[in-house]
Amino acid sequence: MLKNIKNQIGVFKEKSFREKAFFLLPYIMAVIATSRLCELWRLCGGSLAKMIKNAGYLYKTIPRFALIDLMIGVPIGCLIIWYIKWNNKMHSKNTREKEEYGSARWGTAEDIKPFIDPDPFNNIILSDTERLSMKPKMPEFNLNRNKHVIVYGGSGAGKTYGIVKPNMMQLHSSIVVTDPNGLVC
Image (cartoon, rainbow, N blue to C red; front, side, top):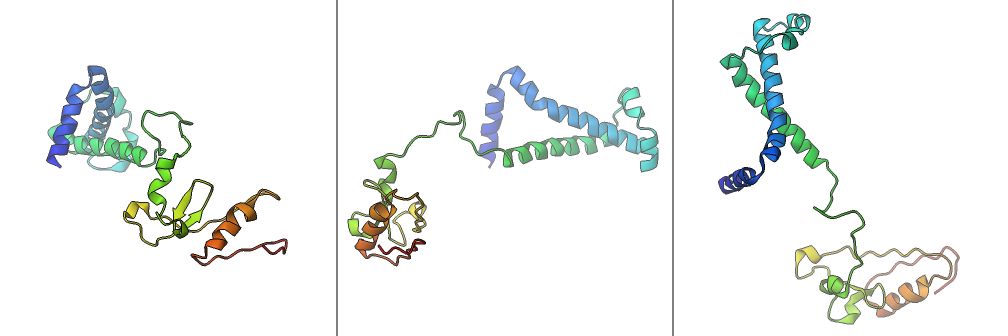
């Protein structure tokens, strides 16, 4: 963890003055605001009614920070900005860094290769070139996939001929086939 912090400090030092200023500006503003609120709280004796009544003090006077105001305001201000940044990061869109929308590509034979069993009779047939292994446990955990297949398509799309019949003929697993028209394969 200490190494990670040192790396982050090194990255921060390499940034330009402008980038550093934009990074630190929200923290500085939050620290000033929370310290001023702590100052008002201290001067009003901790009374919320008096604070509301004297709220104009915050923008009409020059800040007179006492050590106690800074000791409370700095951590609270930094914590508020850290939480806002963390919350934005957690709820941001899941995008790939420095790539535009629409940069997706079609999968290749190399992409599907780890999911195919060397024995062709242990695979679900998905297309002429794509298959999916029926092994319950793959050699690598991240290759495990759900083995369920659902086929939708319009009349005459080739669902029965291209997907259902070839997989049924392999006889390697239980298959449930429904046909709302009542026609038998």
